[in-house]
Image: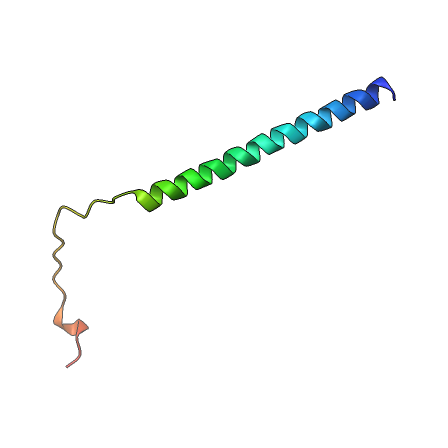
Length: 60
């Protein structure tokens, strides 16, 4: 093997490690986000909503 082939193989190994770490980070982030949304106790709206609906919207 030449020096260039050794460097190229080392580069490929480094890229594989980086890709693996990035994919694991992405999967962990997605799982954490899903867990957060599944367990988050979303507060109910504190202000009442009042709207006046015109009579033209209702048949009869």
